[in-house]
Length: 271
Length: 276
Image 1: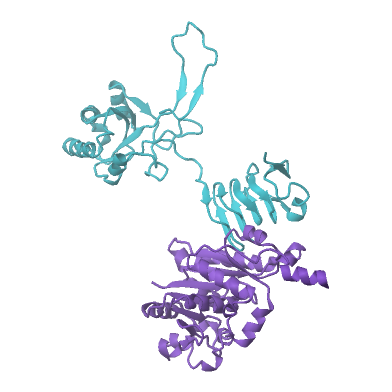
Image 2: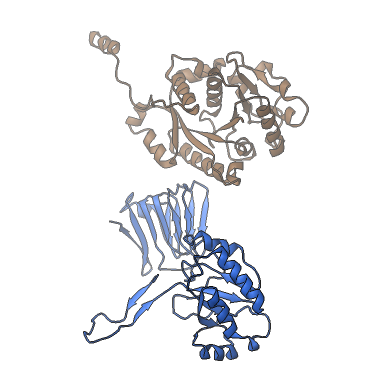
């Protein structure tokens, strides 16, 4: 049975699509057949970040409406062997998604042998976000270390645990928190909420902390999910998060200000 | 198993041979809705076979509240004999019917007030009409008999207690109350075993207990109970209100902020005192 993971946040611009791209690539690179679905109908971005924009012929809404077969709409990723992308429609609106239609597509993916299905949720708490989260087994709640983002994440967690299919069946959706754009130096100065603060407010398990990094922006502009950049702290942090999703115990990193390395110290002394 | 004790005298006189004490004992009500000696005995025997542990000199109160048929000609002595033969000891009668009570007196049975009359101011010593979740500690055998109820004798057993709950049960929530969620406990207390997030709202007709940080809005005694209170592990609320009298966070921040407190209503003003 496929595990359905929704990447959601409430607030826009916190890094949902970046996270969806990185996490789905990471899981696929570890040998699991993975699909990532863009639920942001009308504002599709995932295909740009995954650099498959020009290969989109059919989309999610076409499949739901029966205008195309799932196989025709799925785009095979060029970097990760087991990864397939189901792009959103740019010309429709979110009402094109129906519960039955979404369920049919998810079921077809599961029947097709997909082990992980990542649902990239649109911002907000309207229909599109609801469709993305309804069938989820697990939710990755993406938040930035600032009060409004944390508040919106709290709201999303409430909706998730009361309106999703699992909630309707009296079960809980496995929830975890991914803190993005984290800057330990600014936390130390008191300009940003710390990991502890956010964990305390949301009372939820921490999946990982993605440090603020220029490489994230560069990667999304180039259309290469940042997890492929194994040199960058952001890429490494995403790899850690993927390992944790797959059940490994990995110690959290990038949460505190890094000690100056030997080279930097020597350089400083000689300067 | 006495559940409540109130001593009538503290100083014992050495010469006293007895003293009177209040005691509250669970009693089972045997509600008889139709009587036919053969059917009654047979069905009682089946019950006894299903729950032999229960039918051992067990005191019961005979109830005829739901009796269909001619109650005046009911042979109470026969019913008593059948009950005793199956290990039940009828100790009292509840019917409210004059002729039956006359028979009971002759048979040395106590007479209980008819249904829905409170014998004590606070506690109703009567069988709960529904075998409810509150009788969790009842034995399996007895539970079994509950599910196998048969006409004509309706045997309702909830041996843990006969104390009718006169207030609505508390509502207990074990998961965090998130922003945008609203939880209301009508008629009773609300107990939350987690935090209440900013932007969430919790309401109760009775008290509110939050075993976590209270960051949202909490309104206790919303139907006007000014004796209601709010308890929380950390006061970080946006608003607290007792019976309509409220304070917002600007006022709350002045003292006991982020401390475990209780909030009560003290002559029209909210009093916030630390819990230590």
